[in-house]
Length: 120
Image (cartoon, helix red, strand yellow):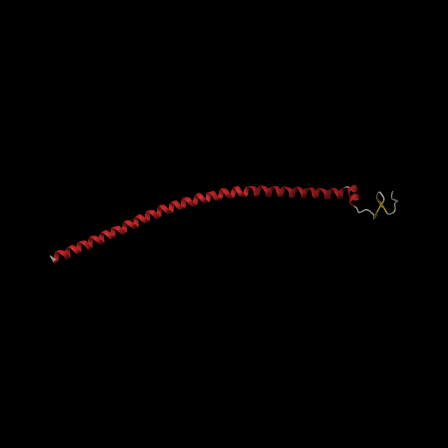
């Protein structure tokens, strides 16, 4: 009977070890499949979120681009007008006279007149 018990113990020990080995392999396989599925889902979610950020970025940058174009156009127009005004003042003698400082004037009575003239 002792021999039978030893043999039974060896068989049970072998069975337990085999069963636990199968359980380990099953757990490893199951968690590996879970890890693969979770990684795939996380990768897909990341892709969706990055696409949403791209759309938001484009929607946010567009008004800034429009504003920049408007400012550049305004600056360009102002620069062009300034160049035209300089050209105009340099080529038109009447404008040159108009922007030359007048002799010293005095306020008197009704209006402003030159010191050498009589005021009304």
